[in-house]
Length: 224
Image (cartoon, rainbow, N blue to C red; front, side):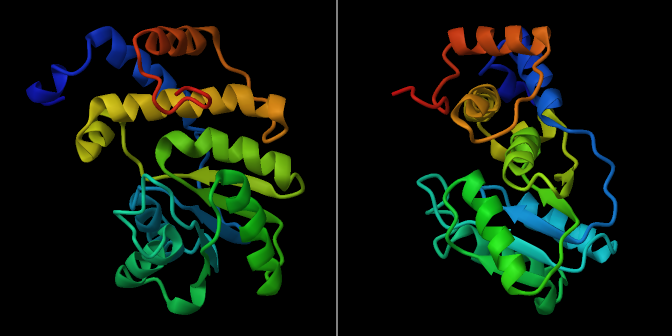
């Protein structure tokens, strides 16, 4: 990592964050699917990855799903899905391969509303390529398995390692807060009926607890 970034976190915290980052990645090999869903967020890499995978012939149609949130309103004032569509078009994805779902405000709604959009468009779905920011892969998978259990799910994201992602965002504290927050949801959401349960290895859970104790908690549900 660049020297200026090392001043924000300790080597132990970077190690713990790497354990959690690697856990969030599902490690799926991209393969052809009936359709794709691009999950809205602050990360334009979702649209970039969708354009790349469509060009590779892995799906005929993608639903970009997402409205706005406090963290994306300034970056994507017309809504996440709309901006994703515009970017994918600029990258060469044909308009007829893109559907837009502009209402979703959380991951469960991403899946539910995208499913409705695909049904209304007459797309029969046996398998889904879920495209998300990297550290959201596992939570997206667990949510989709709960809400659309009959679909075969393949997860994909922009192929970045944690150091490159930290550089792209430019704020190590924020990124680690987000990693911890997503792991909190992986752990807690099955208890609320929002997702299927995922095994969390002991070393990942210990890393999570250390980072929570160190104050990386701004994205944890119920904190503040």
